[in-house]
Each structure stands twice: as C-alpha cells, then as structure tokens.
Length: 165
Image 1 (cartoon, rainbow, N blue to C red):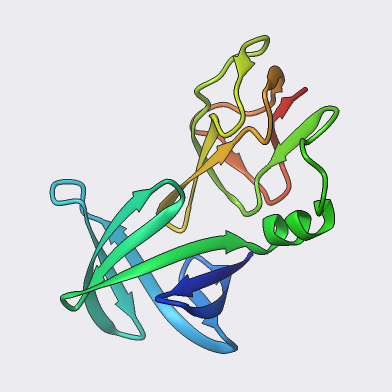
Image 2 (image 1 turned 90 degrees about the horizontal axis):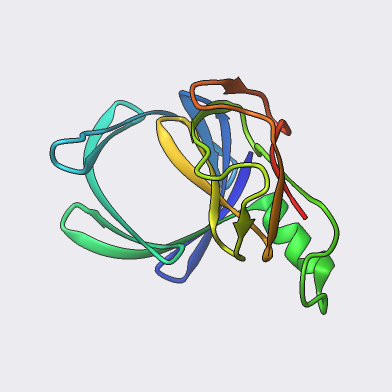
C-alpha cells in the first residue's frame, strides 16, 4: 500500500512492502516497529538503527518527536488521494459505500452494529497492520447496512469490512 506523507512541508511516497520492509521515494528499508504500551513511545528499527519515536495524533494529523525534534506529519493513502481527486466537486458520497481494508491485517475493533445510524467521520472499523492501528471512518452520515468482519479476524487487502448507506 502506498502512502503520501508530508513531513514539515516535504512530501514522501512510502510503499509498505510487507511487515518488515518499506520503500521511501524508491529506496528500500528494513523496518521493525513496536509500540511500548506503558510509555506510549514507539520503538523503530530502521536498517538496523534504533530510534525512540513519540507519535501524537490529532484530527488526522500527527506530531512526531524524533531525536528531540518535533515534526508535523500528515499521511494520506494513495487510494484516498486518488478518490478525492476523482470526486472533485462531489459534495457527499452517495449510495451504499463499501469500506474495504486497504492492506492485509487483523481487525481490532468494529465499534458499530448493523442498523446503527452513523455520522460522517465516525470510526466504523479499526485494522492493525504492521503493528499500527488504522481507523476507518464513515465517508457520510447514514446507516450501517452490513458488518462483514469481526474482531480478531485476519483480512486480506480489499476485504469489505463495513458498508454504509
């Protein structure tokens, strides 16, 4: 899965190859990440070099403390970015929307039930991939039509997790 990441105004293309390899702007790296639950810090090993990283997420943007320097970071997956460009002037998503896993992972939480009313940007699924939890939000106000996965279930890329109409 490709992500377009902006760090302090500089854009990077990050491709997650598998659980232990990423490519940043065409350069491949060995990576291992573990979030330390007691401290909230993330231990990152990048090409054999160890880093302690503190990540604070607020409204879809991140502040990342690395080597004593605070960085402003935004992350957008390639699919979302492409869809935003295609939508252009479309004001609201219409019809039944299928919320799919953009990458393989394990379902952590499905905080909604079939028939439940949801609001735009409400979290409808949480997927863990590469030791990171990713929240998936409803693209519109609507009703949950189906929940096709359950917590603990392993899913492949493009597996439909939830549908909203």
